[in-house]
Length: 353
Ligand SMILES: *Cc1c(COP(=O)(O)O)cnc(C)c1O
Image 1 (cartoon, helix red, strand yellow):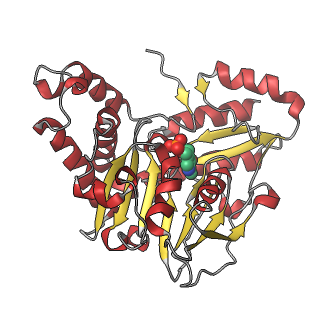
Image 2 (image 1 turned 60 degrees about the vertical axis):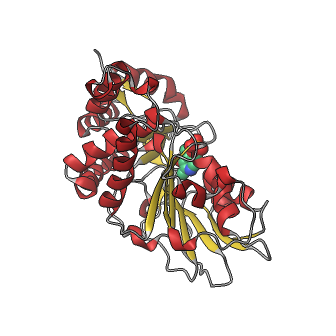
């Protein structure tokens, strides 16, 4: 097999052994003579998968039993709706949002359907080239929502504010990429397909005590409490993405956990940013201090060289380097499973170019 250097922003590269083990599980799961895809989600083999998939998240994040872990359908986009539905008070509901990109703006748009939303900081006027830091969030808000990593622009929150309300974070594109005090958050969500698994499932980590207080009549399928009561099997869960996510998290745990992943991610990002800074042909889109370890968005200063550069990286076996359609340029996504060696290949192409 001729494996490419996959810099795709998502769905993204996963560890090779995750591809192999999940392919095997489709043929014969755990040696039971049946495929993972044809057994009941209530069978003991799958219940064990779900139990471990929930448990491993708490181990990796170092969270206690105040928190529950759910694997839900609908993508991170559904969480743009479930968060306000579950957390914004039905009477005079009010939430604070940080507007750091297209995804943050998507979350804001949905929240406005449930109550009033104050955008406490926004870098929209500057093409989302930085993360606003000069704001406060008081107790008049039901919660504060932020996006830890802005997948399109390549910016990342390096620290999180102390707020006087619940703290909600969309970690879709940097979950499990760096050490954080996860207990500072009351609710974390992440679409799996950026750094922890295939598309089709969304991780939700929620502090139990914050639920059931909105005064809203929440449809069961959108109610975190219902999913918790059913141990993340309120309805048929997306069994394959849950299993592949578990394999990815086991791979992470067996390779030094989040701390070791962060060290590898730092090394990859350093290698690439140093080349962008050194090479007069390229520049990043965003402020240096807010540069993401996960998504390195950059562009050619001279657009007329685009075709030649595209040919050069494609010839080197690189895939998925085009920037998001909204900003163009290039984006090298350095998710956990991308080896340093792939970054070196890209850097060599840039040097030679
Ligand atoms: C990709 C992405 C989303 C959207 O995820 P879906 O699972 O496609 O709904 C939301 N937030 C961030 C930060 C993302 O990168």
